[in-house]
Each structure stands twice: as structure tokens, then as C-alpha cells.
Length: 351
Image (cartoon, rainbow, N blue to C red):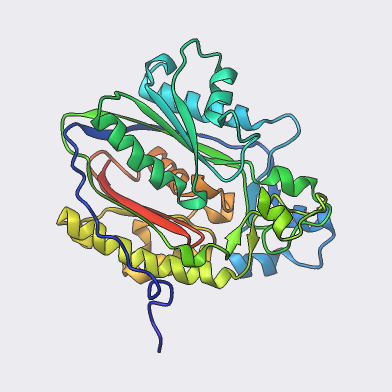
């Protein structure tokens, strides 16, 4: 039986130690989610699909998700997440040294969405901020970046992930049945600050260009090159060629990332209190947990309630575990995220 289907064509880079002279820790988290809950039946009725709620739940494991209403905005959700995060930390926005947002799509590409939310919040200080596009794996990318910014002088780095995937879906007359039930809206914010003790043990990120064409949004020149001329189609929503590739690659990458994170930190899997990962579907989450052989009570999926919130998936779970007091200070967490096979990564840290 053939194995390592998605890694056989590439070589994975070696993991490097976090050579950090100034430690960082997670100070707080916050979320901004729409008020409107869209059930499977709501979507079936809206688009007149020949489907059942039961069949959808059986297929991908989702019951409902959040979709923005007309009176809700992208910047509003970002501001809500930031406000909650900073209030929990008792930190003023003016104390933040840098803001990084990781997205799938935003209101506009330039200026950055971080600029938009600073305007929304009425911030008087010109805090540097920028956006990163890494789809579902984006939050681990920006966490890794935040550690290095704090190591080189920043005191507080605010990172955000997620977005509004439903906006375009709601505008489409006939959205793809491959994706219409998958995506939900939401933003998660995380504040990282300095620490006198070591909290982050290892970090690992990689890309696999072999899966570049499996899941994509045909924006830019791709629209012209591949003939996406009719803007009435769902050209600004995710196009998925083979969903099984996403599942299989996530499982394989989970084992590779876990091995590298644990070996660098000299920690065993038994010492990890919680395993958090992106849950593009209930099946994908379950497969990753089973691949590592850890008890399901040491992990969590929110897919049935929120769907695929892209870069917000992993931090949304972390926020839920913190808010419900299941993760406590001192617990060791392995956190991963997979970007449809094209990029993946993870961090091992003490909360």
C-alpha cells in the first residue's frame, strides 16, 4: 500500500530551534462572530437545494454556522474581537506595537485590513500593521512572526485571523454545493506579550507547492487565464478540486509536524495537555486526532457550530478552551493549522 502520498514529491525542511533571547507568552484572546446563525436547512431553503439536513450532517459533520447580516461589517467583527481581547488583558490599544491579520479575503486588498480596523476603532496612534494571506494555516504563521517581533523589541503584538467568507456566497445565485455548507464567518484576536520565562518551545511551518492547484480562489490574472469572465459566478469563493486530498494531507502533515515539534522541545506526546488543529470538517479533525493516537477529550472541534472559519479555526478552539476553563495556565498545548495542503504548521507552547 502506497504511503506518504503528499510528502513523497517534496523534502521537508529541518525544524530550527526558536533562538529567542526575549520570551513571549499568550496574554489573552477575543472573538467577533456574527449574530445570525445559519442552519443547514436555512441554506437548503435559500438556494432550493435537493438535500437534507441529516445528509449534510452525516457527510461533513456540520449543523450550523454564522453568516453576517446586512447591518454587520468585516471591520466591526475585527473591532469586536480586538476589544474583547484587550479588555481581558487590561491593555489599551495604544500600547500595542504591531498588528498582523491573516486572511482568506477581506473588504479590499489595499490598504491592509489592519488599517481599516484601526480606523474603525478611532485609534490616534499610527500602529504598524499588515495582512498575511495563508488561508487556513495563517494563524500559526502570524503566531510564529509575533514571537520574533517580541524577541526583537516589541512589547505587545496583536494578531488576528478569520474573515467573512459568506459575503460572496450570499451574493451568488448558485454557489457551489462543494463549499456552500462548509464556510462560516468569524474573527479571532490574540495578544502576545513579553515573559520572563519560556512559554514557546518549538515552531514549525512548511509549504507543499505540489498542492497549489487543489484548493484556490481564482482572483487576479487567474480569472483571465482560466476564463473566469462572468463575475456572476462564485469566482471569489474557494474552488476545491478534491476534498479527499485536503483530508489525507492534513493527516499526514499532522504526524510530521507533531514529530518535529516534540523532538525539538524534547517533550513526549503524553505530556501534551491539549491538541488543537484546524477542523475543515468533523472527519478531518477526527482523522488527525486518531493519527496521533491521543484521547479525544484532549482535543476539541467547533466545526459543527461554526463551520470552516479559515484562519480562525484553531484560535477559535483555543479561545473556547480558555473561556471554558478547560485550558489553564501552565498547560502544554500543541496547536496546528493546515492550509488545504499547500501550507501547514504548528507550535508547541505552555499557556
